[in-house]
Length: 147
Image (cartoon, rainbow, N blue to C red; front, top):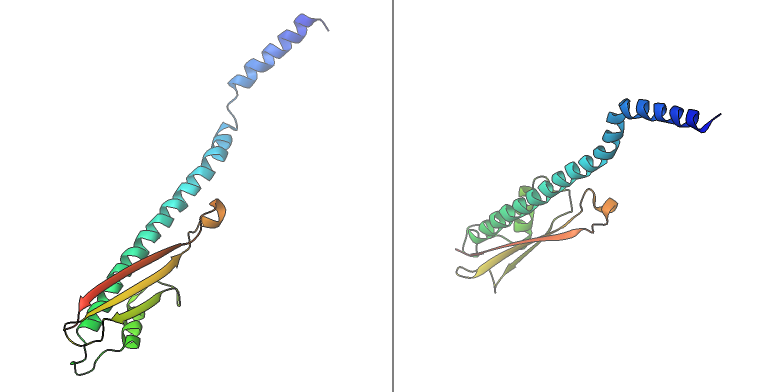
């Protein structure tokens, strides 16, 4: 077969190949879909992180208020365990045992002394194991003066 015939056949094949668009959508989808999925899960992950942090802030404030209005001179004074139980009841959406609660009065729960409620939670990212993100510790605290 002469060289001219080979070149003509290759040229003809190349023109047909360049003009053929079948399958291009599948190839483009194969490149774009993994990126879009990682971005979507990342947005969900960051949204969950913000929600957990905001919920912890609110619950810590409610726990400190609960302890502040139930000081030593109240009809039923609050104990640390009462405050912890109250906070855990208010922490809707947290897995059981995922929230660590610490309650401290300085020096005790008499009126005029501060009460502090400290919440900690280890947040695990959804995509963390796939991209090497370690869990982060969220910490929220709220203090009020016992009435």
